Image (cartoon, rainbow, N blue to C red):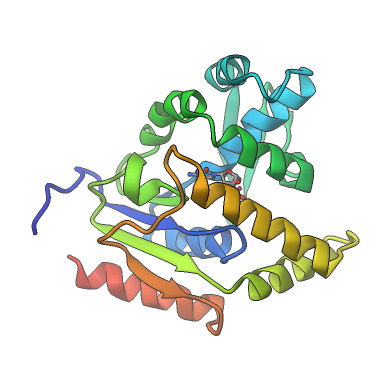
Length: 227
Ligand code: DC
C-alpha cells in the first residue's frame, strides 16, 4: 500500500524505555544531518513543571494547562542538547527517576497529549527529522517514510540503566530498576490514549544482542532502502 509521505523526510523511532533510543536517535540524527525530537522530554518537562508548581498530578485539566504554557528552549550542541525550562537549565533534572515516573503519569492524559501534538510537529523542518518516542510512527507522524520499533528485553534494559546510573555516580539497585521498567512498560502500553504499540509499517528491531553502532547501521540501511 502506498501512502502520501511527509514533505520533510522523517524517521520515527519508537519503543520502550531503555531500548537505547536516546543514543541511537542522536547518532542517526548526526549521521543524516537531520533535526532531533526527543518527545519524552516534553512529558518530562510537563511533569517537572507541575511538580515545581505543586500542582496535583491527578488533576488532568491543570496538568494540561501546565503543558500548554511550557516555556521551553532546546539548545543543541555537537553531541548533546541542553534543555531550559523558563530560562533554567533542567537537562539533568528531567532525567531523575521521579520525574520519569511523573512523565509516565502525565503522558496517560489525553488532554496533555493533544496539547503537545503541535509542538512536536513543529520540529519537522528541512533537511529532515529523527523523532524519538512512543507514538511517533502511530500518532504524531503517521505518514513518516521510515519507522522503526526498537526493543530490548526488560533485563537488558535494566542492566543498561544501572550502568548509566553508576557512570553518573548514582546508586542503582537492579531489582528496583527492573520493577520500575516493568511498571512503566505496563502503564505505557495499557493506556487508552496513544499506547506504546508498533505501527504496522514499522521495522521491528530487537537491540538485546546488538551494539549501538549495529543498531544505527541497520536503521540507516533500512532508511536508504526506503528511498
Ligand atoms: O522516553 P522517556 O523515558 O524520556 O519518556 C518519558 C515518559 O513519557 C515515558 O513514561 C513515556 C512517555 N512518553 C510518551 O508517552 N510518548 C512519547 N512520545 C514519549 C514519551
